[in-house]
Length: 323
Image (cartoon, rainbow, N blue to C red; front, side):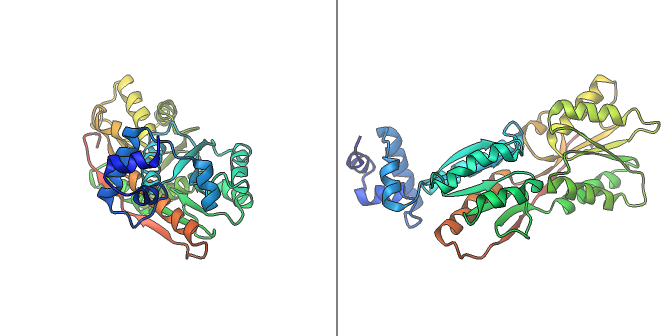
């Protein structure tokens, strides 16, 4: 199928179709939508290799994700993919599990110009090795944000969000507030624990570390908390998946939520609204994290000298029945 057929179907010029395919920001949104719809209806497949030879760009972005089964990661990746497509880019997803050996194989694509830039959602502890492999190529940190690196980042203020979560539990009357944390290789885990400890300073504290962010790890962490001589009357988990596991443990052991124990999560993934009771949580702007990471990366691809920025997006407390 030719580009001319796409142009006729959309009612635009072939030059406009070309601008859409190349992600030209000057194209009006409604025109871009018409062209994209025509491309889909015509089943048009542009010759990506020819375009790469003309523009010296692959129009591919590498996304390094620690665990794609994490609902938070999946929602962010959706935002990345949608924004990339608006600018004529596609994504290559690496489910890295924060393993440098796996990431290094994908990052070789940078030197071969198979991808134009990288978005990393990996643990902050991986960054020294990653930056060596990335070199001078454009990259952006998403979800994790260390300003000491020469890369833009987009995240939330995890410390303040965690402290606000604990403060909400305190104001609701809970006295023994425990934390279910995850892997401390991640900066957000460190920051959320710091926020928890600051908000409970001088009060009762208990922290358990789950071996993953999986649902079952939340069950196991909750079981550990309830072997204590004086168990918590409220539990704050650093992810909704862990909080969901904590809820399951409560139900299976005859604990009423929130009367016997309150449970609070973090992220704001959709399943939290349909648990029993619905989960109180800190909601992150997951889609917008993905969108902004693409926008910041494309700015660096277009202008390698652009100044790096460390964006902090807003979060919100979503109060439901589990507290």
